[in-house]
Image (cartoon, rainbow, N blue to C red; front, side, top):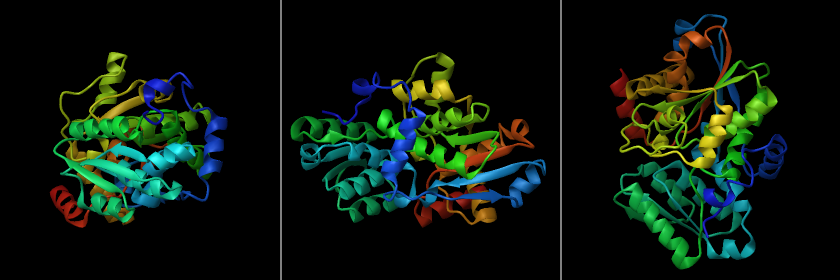
Length: 337
């Protein structure tokens, strides 16, 4: 059976309640890092925005495994009973989810099989191998999901979904809980959107703590399933994905994550790849951060479509991951020069 498969658990809770988020944070304490916040006051921010604007970075790229994904993956795997851990887990991912499932599986004593497209980042592949996961390479992400489902059927493994489901959202919501304790009086939080698990979880925590704080999601123009879902009024699937932000490349939205985002996220905005690479350069030049394209999405939105609306406000940007190899990072920064 698929671990916490969206269809099986969507009725359990429409969204993570604040007390559930607090319990999750307590359960994960000691296994994940409480990531820091850092105020950005120089360079691009100082030049582009009103001096009254406060910009805070929530540095989830400093999380174990190099991204936010560990929070949801570990919360899912901690829920497995002993027989399920013995059978092992499986995941399909080209990136940060695979790394986090590998880490979480090792932490709870379960064996992980990971189906990954061959084009996956060499840094992420190496990180999975460091955690002793078994890797199965495919030509496409669709083939990876098909293999993962076959392993569920043939071996009784539990599938850990990359972004959908209550336990994933409870895990990502702990970022919002931390952030609201670290920076008081926020006017807005800006969060990258792939499948919506990160944005929905953070938004659920933020809005239950301070309903007046706005939450904006950010998608690449070439992977805007949640933006289109909001417009359609229901989850939609994309015909194709085309963006440098592979971590935000979910080709569809699913019911649970869409529902949480629709309830708590004020608006989804879009940025193009050029804006992402420019934001990566700003984060590196001004803040000395090696952010993958997805992690630069919130910065791109603040300096782009949200600039006028958030001028003079106290704003938090979620910097969600840094799993990018040096060669690729250099290529993208050179393109932004």
